[in-house]
Amino acid sequence: MRKRLALCLALCMLLAGCGFQTECQKHSITLFGTFDTVVTLTGYASEKSFQQEAGKVREMLEYYSMVFDAYQEYDGMNNLCTLNRLGGQAAVTVPEPLADVILQCQRLAQDVDGGTNIALGSVLFLWHDFREAYAKNPENASLPDERTLQLAAEHTCLTDVTVDEAASTVRYEDAALKLDLGAVAKGYAAQKIAEMLLKSDMPSFLLSLGGNVVAGEAPLDGRAFWSVGVQDPSDQYGATLDVVFVTERSVVTSGDYQRYCLIDGTRYHHIIDPETLYPAQYVRAVTVVCQDAFLADYLSTALFLMPPEQGMTLVETLENVEALWVTQDNTVQMTPGMKEIAQSQGANAHRLAGE
Ligand code: ADP
Ligand code: MG
Image (cartoon, rainbow, N blue to C red):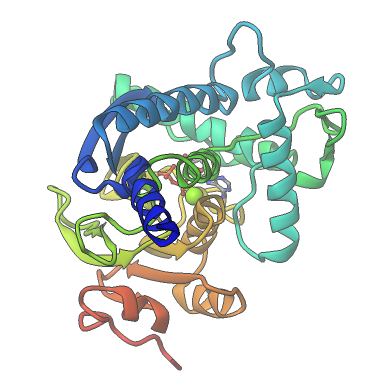
């Protein structure tokens, strides 16, 4: 009798929530209007759970997109735009994620020797203004001049940003410094959303936030992995160059093919080399796979800002980080671990010199 009761109980527990597989179906939703990009969420859950989780995802996207907005302020919060306006004059009380992301970037800057510098805002805003002017009227838009870029570059030292974690305040010791979180904001938000979903009724999900993809637990249709396409930068229709198979991993790409202006054959894109102060020319795209979406976003920008050989050496020093490079001449290079999770198994990847 006891045994039967225990069996019954176990069965009930299995049928409750999403153990009840017939209720769990694949759902997808596309969300617009946050982070200046398109977001898609796919998940295996009951209709009710999916709608509930999608609602939470939308709320989180709206919140983080406001907090990290460098161009517009909002009532009731001191966001990045407010901080850039006031941080040079006094310590500004900011939402916890804003202080947290700055601190995390400061810590990473000590460990990772790369070009991702969120304090490069004064330089990046000049390039942003140029791209905006170009989009409105290509004839009248002039490239930022070298002298102006160099003057702006004198105010880009990340150690001039003081964060008081306990008080959640931030202050700029250099009054002309500006922060730009474009390189990490989407990854940070994607990571927070993924952590929420993994603990929710829908731990089996795939979230794509612009070039930032996070896979949750395996799809509930028998497949062991989610498949994530890596775009071919040279294909104007966005054809897939390879597919990587992942669960509970992030797949983040930085490329020169999404936000750019083409002038006299030169591609002026949005990832700026802090050495030259001009768009970096090492590669066309880099895809990073690792567990944390924020780290993946930080690293994808960092690896975009160095030659692939140097990037390979950097990745070798990091645990559980894989990368794929598409070089200027459109050859593909991969870390050995990336070859293992890529559909091509690296068949179309060329070996790096010295590998
Ligand atoms: P995307 O935003 O297209 O996903 P990235 O994650 O590489 O690509 O971030 C690019 C953004 O990062 C730019 O739009 C800009 O806001 C910012 N950025 C550009 N160059 C740098 C840099 N050297 N260091 C830090 N941030 C940068
Ligand atoms: Mg990035």
